[in-house]
Length: 232
Image 1 (cartoon, rainbow, N blue to C red):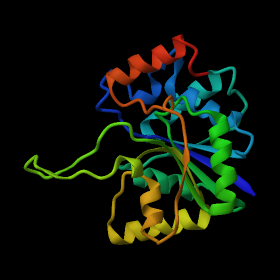
Image 2 (spheres, one colour):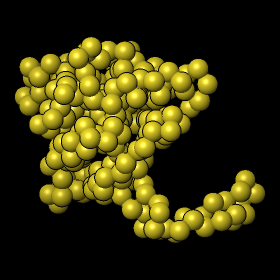
Image 3 (cartoon, rainbow, N blue to C red):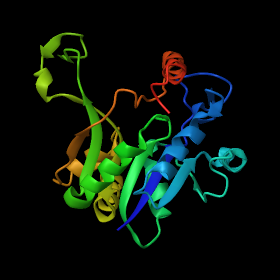
């Protein structure tokens, strides 16, 4: 069963600020996106990697990957992204090899994903069809109206923070994106699109170190995790 990873790095990272898109910022002396891509080449279940980046960054990204001693010669496919995350995923899906059976979709801004977690998701998706990583919510969550009035407090035991990778049968995720496009429906993750098709999505417990670099504080945390040896 052939498995392809689609790594998304086409966003500008405006919340992070800085002189360059966040995928090219240095963490521990290496570009963030290089660290992320490497994890998928270390996973034993991944056959191919497609990196989706902004059109204007294709050349720079190609040079970064080629210059990295751990990735040189790995054959990562590059694909220009779209105007939104969802459009970028569709661009990645369009580049899949016809023999691909499972697709692992991952945020390029999560450089500390453990390759073993990638393998666990793929193995579970082979049986179940749709699997995502997540961690249990630790804080109390409240549903709040636009007027900032608390409407309800869902039981914390049922709440999870969902991460990536999210792994799906190819036909499921392709159909889910096609339907979302027809319906003009936008979601914050791919699992939501699969859920709209009444397909069961299962959650595997992940790691809190699988952080998404979004704000300047996340960069500080990322450097601390590396310095303390909490992540590879």
